[in-house]
Amino acid sequence: MGSKIKKIAVFTSGGDSPGMNAAIRSVVRTCAYVKVDCIGIYRGYEGMIEGDFVPLNARSVNNIINKGGTFLKSARCSEFRTIEGRKKAYDQLKREGVDAMVVIGGDGSLAGAEVLYNEYNIPFTGIPGTIDNDIFGTRCTLGFDTALNTVVEAIDKIRDTASSHHRLFFVEVMGRDVGHIALNAGIGGGAEEILIPEEDLGLERLLDSLKRSKARGKSSSIVVVAEGDRTTGKNVYELKEYVEKNLPVYDVRVCVLGHMQRGGSPTCFDRVLASRMGVRAVEALLEGKTNLMVGIRDNTIILTPVSEAINGKTKIDRDLIRVSDIMTL
Image 1 (tube, rainbow, N blue to C red):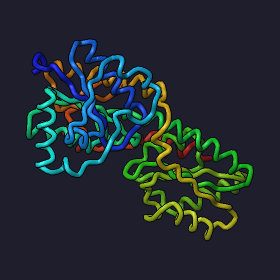
Image 2 (image 1 turned 90 degrees about the horizontal axis):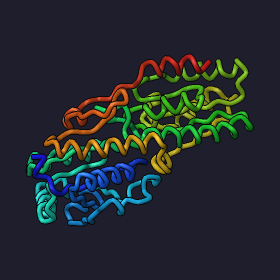
Image 3 (image 1 turned 30 degrees about the vertical axis):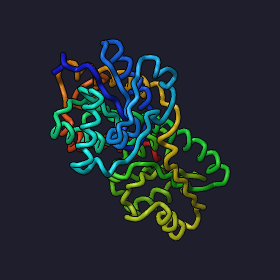
Image 4 (image 1 turned 120 degrees about the vertical axis):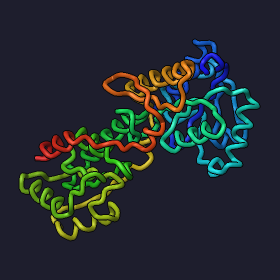
């Protein structure tokens, strides 16, 4: 399989994340290094169906390693979920002479490539790009480190006004199903409490913690809340109302960081990780390997079957929860 690969397509799909451009750059330049043609697909699977391709070479990816987002753009594509849509995508790939693909995105993007392989036998490797760090088979996904730094910087600034006005701030961060951002950034930002989907803190424990903070002389507090936290079963604004009702001594504010966590120039860690992953993704294809996702574990680049990456569940670091409990004194 490997010796037959003459042209590799690279594309980004699903949500964007810092480091995607660096990964595209790595894939393109690795292809140039091994003398394999490379094309980019604009707008993910939507662009694949429409044949929105562009030839890429080493110079095409100048000066993008430092940019957030993805210059190849991304789009959700309901048509690709249909048999007819995937047939159109396959026809466009064959017309362009594509022998293999590198997909950069989340579990939905990886699943789409796997379906296309099962139906049309197009080899692919995947690079996990999502700030949530919720893909099995890698310690870090592309963009996670940058998102953490963005959140910590925001918490630092919020703390300035919280302490100036003796306020309690609930800072909501992304993480509908996992609390990796909240837990890590909460510890890094010195939060008094961290609410994550994996741990049902309970309203009474939260109130007790805030009471203890006030009794110890803390005049302001930061509580980091993952958007998927189940403490109230509702949302962060209702959590604010509950605390105000039961602890009127606090002046409570809410700050939802939202999509700003996805933007910004990638950190050095994410740039290096993207570069390493891009090289390995291309090399794996040339070695005749397919249906694999590139990841990192113990600072070593590894390959995980895409089926495991999609179906596996990431686990929260229990030791970080223990550290968080100690740090809230």
